[in-house]
Image 1 (tube, rainbow, N blue to C red):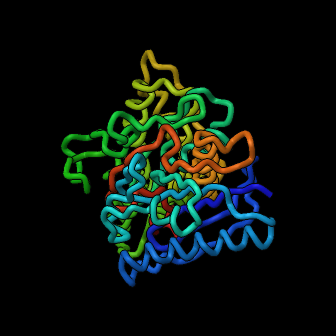
Image 2: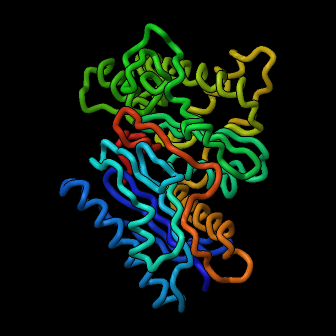
Image 3: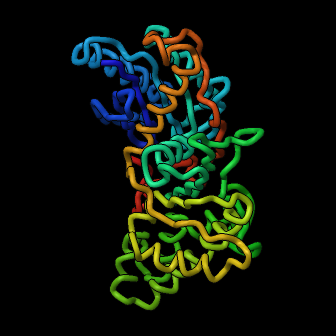
Length: 347
């Protein structure tokens, strides 16, 4: 059965899959990144994992993967296939595409930024399916977005499009990891809610999930913390919809796991802020933590089609990247990921 290898590399762990031409996850696996052993060990683990996936495909599906896609955090140069920098993994300027291509017998390899890759999957297969224009935003330790246009992700001239987390919503607000003050990420991310609720509750171990539960229980202090974050989030999202006019606004990542505790006040806050703008449908992401793998698989299939392997059943020989994907900036933890509500870096 024809398939590709998909890898979603996180700060502490990797999710991987063999993905069929119809987007089906034929096989899934997880493995620790071994980041405590240093960046070289992380790269080695990725290469070993990919090789094991290739061997599994040969054994169970009768043939080797015809391409591979990998989504990584931090700064990504998709054109050159380089993982430029990720503070959480400790690497710099890793030629990951070439290394993977060599380890996998020369098959084409696509490299993408993790949030944009997850956004690609949500747009084609998940909550944005059928929408000609969508905006995906991941709320985790950091905040990042992906601009979807006709089934592709717009990377921008320099690969930084969609970095909504660094839109300043309160100029006198807290300092952000990027060096500005009052960025949406510094107020409305899961990490920011965790900091605010730990201070307000007097419990240094309290996190964003605890805050959401306290909101549901009617705790007034928790409601104030939560609505302050929602207000900042709405301000940034209205800026995005003013510029982009998306048909669908997809919200994923850790804070989205709070469900209507987040979405009900968020929809209200957005509607209060708009004047002439059309309010898009605001929906939760549908694919959960499989989005990265599915998106990486889509990158691989797109690349394969572009290199001449999409019609005659043979893989092309060119290496490169799927269109619409570029670099991404590091977030407050250096991961760029849409992490769980507890603000852990992805497992």
